[in-house]
Length: 504
Image (cartoon, rainbow, N blue to C red; front, side, top):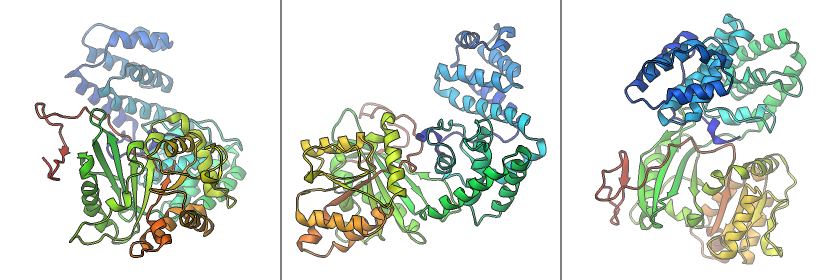
């Protein structure tokens, strides 16, 4: 499952929750397009005809593009298959201004289909039980309750309500349970302390009795409870993503998100983008962390994720979190590196997810120390220890091989991966407890090593953990624009840090 189904605070507003409101919203969006037409209606009608959408044959193609679009919406707005055909055709045209319209069409299609499967009273109750549910963990819940090879969630599923309606149309699970009921069970288990948990289970149990799947529902309920119990407590987190400039090798765009789990399960909030010169990365990172971490750390532990391209993967991320002279220290942090390159290569995601599940569920782990191997072959391992730092040729090849083969956890020393002290430290980290807690142990070891000077503490200070959780991806992001130059108009909302560290 990819990040397209992950809820995003910068996505368009969620579609309205009832049919009349959705239809009004569609026509309002069409009116917005009228001022800047981006839809070639002749091409749109040809696509519909090619897909055997018979409703389009009766459309009067004369008049303005906006008027033709209104006619198409009116002609298809009562049949889910017709709405889907129109959404597919508009999606094929790939005009950026149409994405919100396509999402609304998808939501309308789901609601039209739901009317045929649930009574108005059942739909109203389901909406009341789900529309106020926190959806920051939606991706993880859906992945847990569906088979591993299920299709990704479409982008319009940005809340528990829209996701529930979409899953109502999915085929039954292998045990015969409708995906909607499985989702409601996992949603209820994830919100044990919520007032909606028990009513949600009662709603699902009533529908399961009507549909003859009561036994399957109870089995699913037990699995959902185990899943919720095994899920570690979330930490407030700060995500820092470095995008290479593409033209200048020493310039990066720094994009940040922060999420406070104590703030009523609020979605991640995005900070301002900044163009950062390589020489100013440490200062920019520390300022970003200082801005958010003090507030987040009042009630929770804080994890800091650095999403890095290969050119930065061996940089001293821990030192970036360290204050300069005269600066007050920050609260305790759990720091990990994430692979931006792996995220951008969907063909690598299946082995990655498979190895992550093994890493989380199994107590029998066999870490692969490449220093003790003759090759960099990493196919069978979910935890890889590099034989050399990844900023030289050998280390880079080892890291790329580990990413290709899906290893979600990769350890190395920034300077010397061959020392006996480093290997001892790594073995102790691995043997100390479940690997799911490895980031916490690495961070604790790194903090404990700050004030010592012996060989073991030197080895601990150089440890880097690449920890790629496929269930914690980046929110969907708009395409980055080309960098602005002195003689061009500045990009709105984008800061540039000069060599002196001042924003301009």
